[in-house]
Amino acid sequence: MKKENKNKSQKKITVILGQWLFLCIGVVFVLSWIFVCILQNRLSDKETVSLLSVNISDVTADISDASDENLLALTHRVAELIEAGSANIYEIAEEYSIAEINVVNAEGIITESTYDSFLNYQMADGEQSGEFLVLLGDEDEYVQSYQPTSSDPSISRKYAGVSLSSGGFVQVGYDAEEFQKDIDSQVIGATRNRHVGQSGYIIIADENGMVVSDRNGGEGEELSLTGISFDAASLAEDRVFRSVVYGEDCFCMYEYAEGYYIISVLPVSEALSSRNIAVATMVGMEVILFLCLFLLLCFLLWQLVIKNIHKINRGLLEITEGNLDVVVDVCTNEEFTSLSNDINATVDSLKRSMAETEARINEELTYAREIQHSALPGIFPPYSDCRQFELFASMHTAKEVGGDFYDFYFIGEDRLAFLVADVSGKGIPAAMFMMRTKTLIKDLAESGMEVNDVFTAANKRLCENNDMNMFVTAWLGVLDLKTGLVEFVNAGHNPPLVKIQSEPSAENLEKGRFSYLKYRSGFVLAGAEGIRYRKNVLQLSPGDVIFLYTDGVTEAADKDMEFYGEERLLTLLNSADYTPERLCGAVKADVDKFAGDAPQYDDITMLALRYNGSSEG
Image (cartoon, rainbow, N blue to C red; front, side, top):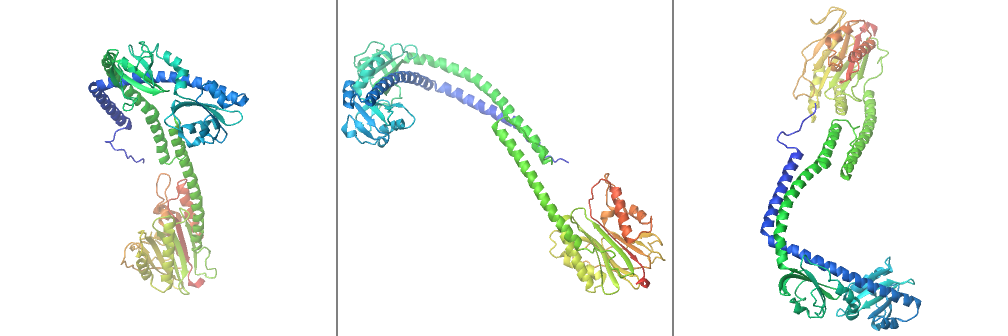
């Protein structure tokens, strides 16, 4: 029966995720709406910053690209002249108005320079100069922005480098005057057709505060005449400040790049007018966005996670129910593919481990069965020179090893002890307890005790350290071969079947037929301390038979769980006159026929004894 661990109060993960997702998105929307309403001015400022900074970045990129192209073209020309050997670096520097030329070898050391102090300088020693070491690798050209030099931070230059075919590279540097002279034409045209918003614009000034480019016609004038005034030392480049530019209140932002101050200007009136439109648009868009996002996330969670979890759970359910041949195949994405592979690998590993363990246990149990069977008497007839009795016994375990056992041995010259016992449980623990019980009973019986005292002493010893609470049912008899008198004791075991040929000495026995020998039974061995057992006697005559068995015979079941039963056993034994060996074989064959394909649930142990009388000894 499948066990259900489902808690009725628990919700499905889809419901929980949906509720939490709706709650989280709702909270985010409310907080967003509140912040939009309260922080309208800040949002407007952010939009203004974005608009100003984007235009500055575009202009800066245009100027930088133009500067890079000019300087790289010049550097390539210098590299060609150096490799051709047509002029030295001083002549080249003078001809092209270059502030600095350095030739660097393959080890990154300056070998030629228009500055003698730079000779033998290791380029890797400076952060700015070290950047050019990429030219010793896979790069063919490299250009830097206008910045302070490594050798003298008070001097700002723009450098470019080009690798030489002979190894190393040449480095060319512009100073401020040459740099600006080279790109002033590009800078002037950079602001002509550029708008910041609808009515804003860009103003570019040089390091001295002179306007280089201005859409309003202020080129050549001081920057302060436009109304823009700021302290570059205290005002960060990414901060917005307000100035009255050409008589109009404006938001401004500047950036210093390539030796120029690039200033972005946006009228305050335009920035504030767009604020209200932005707020209304944002709130409306958020409503639509959050609704779509909620629906999309729910759909994605169901398609990508929940459905796959259900598929994996169905596979795991079959695996936990014992079907190890199930293959989990959820390969919709990398994570579930990995999880499916891990589950399948775990099951395969488990199957291999189980197979290896089963093989090892089967091998060990085979050895244990051989040891157990070797501990039981196995030669029949057991005493070929003794004609006073015939005896045969067999044990068929439900598993490789079992808890049933039989035994017989002489106590003196004319007294034969024989018994059958059944240990509770099965497998190795029952087999170990069986060996302990068998040895203990035999030692006590051979010491000369009465049969009832044997069981009393055995019960006491077996109760000691019985942590697994195992117990034993047993029937022990001692046959006097001269007189035919059997002294026996029963510790909770099945009553034996006895066939008496002469007049029976017990009321419940029938002459000439097998009958159950029913006396009051004692308690099982190892079941409780302080138990004392009672001895009973049975008089046998020549031809009388005693058949001992365990409950594996009478409780053998067929596929409909119907038991073999005592009546069927009694009928079989009275159907023919069997020898002890044939008697045990006929019972086992009939039990197997009755059970059919149903598995054997319990050990089947039998012992048959025919008393022939002392005259045959």
